[in-house]
Image (cartoon, rainbow, N blue to C red):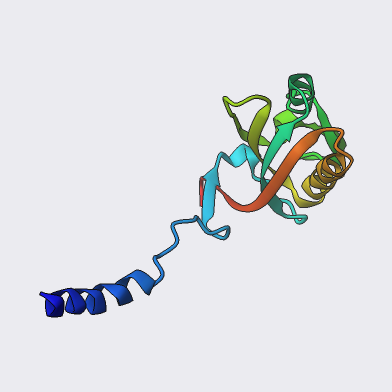
Length: 146
């Protein structure tokens, strides 16, 4: 009996030590989005998933208001004049967590515009005026026609 138990331990122990494959989606795996959200101009497109735990529900509403101004950048269509972009222009999706003032949203658009947007959000997290917890990750968005 002891021999069987020892054999099982010697057989099962190495299986417990072997690392299991990670199921986390890689950041470089493409995620297809509607063509209207993909910025195909020379500046390049950037996709970001942002997670924020807001200080209050009012701040959440103001931050994720579709008419909230994001910044000035070239228009998507000819004659490509400088224009004010709003959250509606870049918002791909949003998920409101049921546990308080929490949201996860994905944005896609011109790289310089979204880097400035992300930097502003980071600064507001650091001074704790907007979030009490904040995170982001870059996403490889691709147009659905790819």
